[in-house]
Every structure is written in C-alpha cells, then in structure tokens.
Amino acid sequence: MTNARLRGSTKAAPHPGTPSAQRRRRGHPTSVGAWPVLFIGPLMAGVAVFYYWPIIKNIIVSFQQTGAFGGDPHFVGFDNYKEVFTSPDLMSAIGNTLLYTAIVLLGIPLSVFIASMIELPGLKGKGLYRTMYFMPYLAMPMAVAQVWKLVYNGNFGLLNQILRGLGVSNPPYWLVTPGWALFAVSLFGVWASIGFNVIILSAGLKAIPRELYEAASIDGASTWRQFRTITVPLLSPSIFFLTIMTTIGGFQLFDALYAMIGTGNPAEPKSRSLVFLFYREAFVNSNQGEGAAVAIVIFAFVAVVTFLQFLGQKKWVNYV
Image 1 (tube, rainbow, N blue to C red):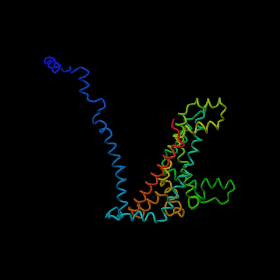
Image 2 (cartoon, rainbow, N blue to C red; image 1 turned 30 degrees about the vertical axis):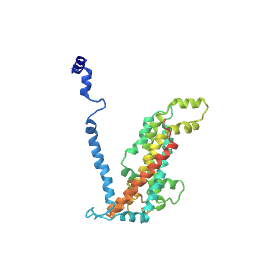
Image 3 (cartoon, rainbow, N blue to C red; image 1 turned 60 degrees about the horizontal axis):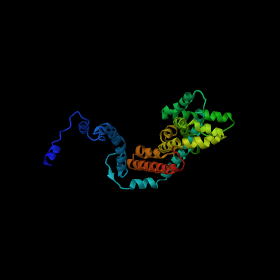
Image 4 (cartoon, rainbow, N blue to C red; image 1 turned 135 degrees about the vertical axis):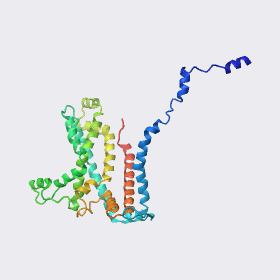
C-alpha cells in the first residue's frame, strides 16, 4: 500500500509540449489580461475629460456666483436656480423649445413617405435620390441658415415673391414678426432633418422581407393596408430612433435660431429657446452661475423626455 502511494505521488510531470502543459501556461480560457484596458483606456479617458468632467464642472458652477470671466467664485447655494425658475423668460423658452421640437417631429412622417417612395420596387436611380436628400444634411448649418434667411426676406425673398405671385398682397416679414419667426425656423428644421431621416428609414425599409408584401398582395391587401400593417410596424424601431434623436436635437436649438433671428430682433424675445437663454445668461450677461443652472434644466428636460419615450416605446415599437 505504501509503495502504491509513493508511486502515485511521484507521477511524472507532463512534458512541456503536451496540451495540458500548454493550457496551464495560457491560464484560464476567459482571461484576457490587461489588453482591454490598453485599448479602451485612451477612449474612456477622452470621454471622462471632454464629457463627464464638463457635466460635473457645470453642476458645481450652477451653485456659485462668479465674475465676468469665471473668476472669484463663491458658493450661493440654490440662488441661481431660484433666479432661473422665477424668471418669466424660462417658461417662454420652454414653450418655444417644445413647439419647435413638436414641429420638427412632424418631419418624421414626411420622411417615412419619401423613403417609401424611394424604395419602391423597380424604381431606378435610388442612389441618386438618396444622395440628393442627404446632401443638405452635410452642409454647414450656419451657412444653410443664411441661405434660408434670404429666402425668408420680407422684401425680396423667394418665398414672399411666390406668395405675391399667388395673389397674397401683404405677405409677412417672416423673421422679424413674433408670430411667424419661430414657425419659419421650425420649417427650416424640418427641411434640414429630412436627409438624415430618409437615410435611416431607407436602411430600415431594406431590412423588411419582400415576401411579406407578396403574401399580403396574394391575400388581397391594398397598398395602403400593406403600408399600415407591414411597413410602419416593422419600421417602428427606426422611427423610434429618429424620434429620440429629433427630440434631443430640438432641445439643443441654437445655431439656426441665432443665424436667422439673432439678437436685437423684435421677434427674438418671443422665439428664444432654452439654449439661447443659456447663451444670453452665460455669455451676454456674463452670469455663468445662472447659465449653468439653465444648462442643468436643459439636461433634466432631455433626460425626462427621453425616459418617457423609452417607457412608451414598449407599446408601439415592434422588435423582430
């Protein structure tokens, strides 16, 4: 018995070239070492420096009162938030931002219709049509806004020339009339968003199997019924994505508003967005504390609206 134990304890070690020895050298199959950190580390460092730290710094500044250039900061608690929420400009800016976002969201159904027309079976030149719709999206927003500013010109703008030709004797001065300025900028927002929307929706339409349409045609379903029962439900993930992106973009309205309306315009107080209010407080009035508080309000609105959209998408978005 003792000899058997000795023989078992003195069992020869595996040769270095055997599979068991190689597995022991490599370690656990799921162990990857420090390589993920080396690859992801620089990216995460950049995200932390350029995204997370500005958010944290903005929260800190929102509780401070600073000088014109951010100097001599001192803690004031919630005073900046009290000033922001008691200002009548905040509710006006929220209303204008929500109205602009709602109008721009109407561009999504229009984009669905355009993308469906482009993706009709047998249509030639689909790539050309997609390029034509997408090209405006690649242009600089400020440059395109200047072109639209000329279109909206009350004296010699193309839009008013067309309206006069149709018999409208006194068309409005679009960008200087409080009742029309925000509406004019919103139409520009709809036009500017169509190119991106069409590309996303065209990709979603390509993913829908053609067999479903063929089966529906055999069953006698009309084109409208196929669109309503096949296209829209299966395209709902793309529509939901565009809804999220359009909403976030709507709450970030500034560049087009600043380029087309600017400051000193009689329509500016009635067209001011939340980001425009942030710009006025932080950079025009040099009140960085209140500007930071407005930025927190914008962040909270975007977070809440996006959260509600994700809750509601369970009822109408179909993931195949």
